Image (cartoon, rainbow, N blue to C red; front, side, top):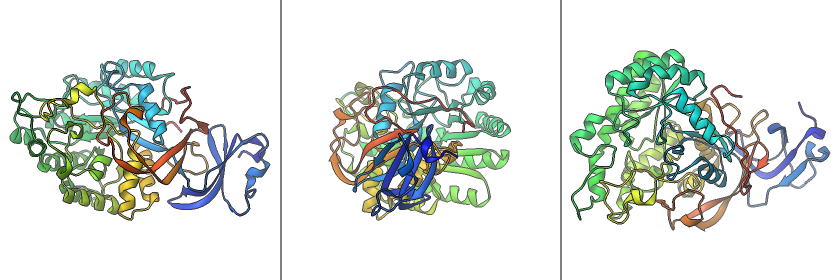
Length: 469
């Protein structure tokens, strides 16, 4: 264990989220890792071993700041290479750092090529290397023609595999039919890998909107789809049927699965029952499902389009209850940006607009604003957005303030109010469902392994692999 004279950084905070509670701490960092955490007495500013840290930088948080572990966002579409004009590693990771997110996992689409072969993974890693401002890991893809490539991707260190049970919206990443999904689950079970699933049922979507799968679809000129029509085209039953299939395959194979971006609270009882039976199944939801309600989305406001869709207030309340009960495990962004023209804001046509919400930089204040109104403590938000995603992805040194963890830290001002100026965000394209919204809680500083990264133009991030300590 490092002695005080070995420390590179000492951080003191009157409030810090440690082990699921808030308390005053002083912590020491050596070589990017937290090497000790002690109780701190703010009335005795020199208390704690950090007083002997010769040469170490000493940072004391302001009275109105709380020290948090860096968030872990396991659902980010970076899109580079191939669609870098939508988002790239440099812009995405700058946005992450500014939002208190110190680790992201990149989805295997919408880049070209998608991450479905070892060669494609290496291409993506080569592009990312040297330009990431936070740590980045990668999901592999499970698609019909490349199921035999999954073992090589697993051995190369992807954190797991993503598949769709309905049209993904991009032709180079086709969905799995029931037989293909069954085989893919057998493969991941054999590898001990996690399968993360976009759980909407293709047949259910087809029945409600034969031409309106996950991909943008044609609509009659000058007749933009209302939000109500779009919502009706992606009913809750599409999610529940897909979750039923996921449960069935986890039960059959003994594998591990994770349901992505749950928007339909109707599926929660299925998750609860499956876990009561001992199945290895988790689920996430997203800030937009928890903070925006269908009733408040105006006609033509395609910046709110995403798949699965944002549902009504009653459904939203049930999602919050599912988080509180542990039936839903975590909150991640599903940052799915595009160029502004693909959102078709000029026509307001929900049928043709790209489905995705950009929120990587905003997730923490968006969630805290709503959680605070509901009387939910900051410690719970940290668990949902840092510890739980890190645990499910197998990132043992991320998402927590404890000895041995990476010194990924955030100075967060929970009482500061501010208005979202989309042009000031680091996202590559200035389209955001939260534009102009008043938020409570601001990220003031972010450290990655003890290095400040909030405004540093130099990239300090690393590329992560499965099993990396």
